[in-house]
Image (cartoon, rainbow, N blue to C red):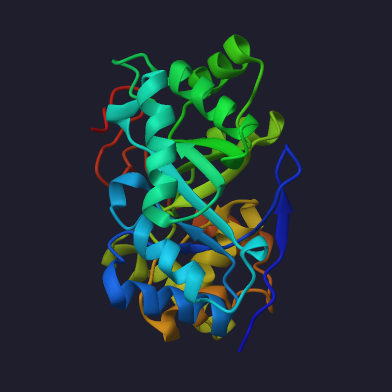
Length: 281
């Protein structure tokens, strides 16, 4: 079964699917096989990785083994916090490509702003230049707050196409999402299922799932889609991968959307990683 996944257009014209495959901890032969199944048999076209996941080689091998043409895929990786000087960032982008044995990334993101280091504008300039060199098709960020995003555009004249943020029913990021919408930046959700058993056993979502005859995961991922967010759930299981993208044959009504959004918490971040202070290595 190859499911057709809707696409969204970024502010630089690149189109990406509204749901992709997270690959954190997917490595080696098992990881390759899992990704190839997702691409060839299920219809995934967006694959999310990062330098710090140490699996860019696995992603690249899956791309080569896949029967899907490279230009139909959207491959993402991310710059780690320890390499945010301009020279380090340029070298790391090249290293990311060497690791994956790819000619280009479709998306390359700064993983965290690391505001204490105060190098993210420098790193952003490296991404801008790497895009000009053809190493990246679209450039974005992760976990950036509005003040970080405003500074990027003010100092370089280039705004990110996408901001990948922590987003799940316990942390719905309403203000951040509204800011993205007002500034033509796509919201992408990491940990869309909250990386936790708690959300999968939430009574509110379970009740909606029962009434809709869908799984809890499908209800949550449909919620992301209707919020306008691009989600990247991770799974190594073909059955779960299929379940995660089988969300385009139903709609949540306004009441159901509000019930799920209402589960948000002030302290909803899973590990307390506040981008205003958090520093990634």
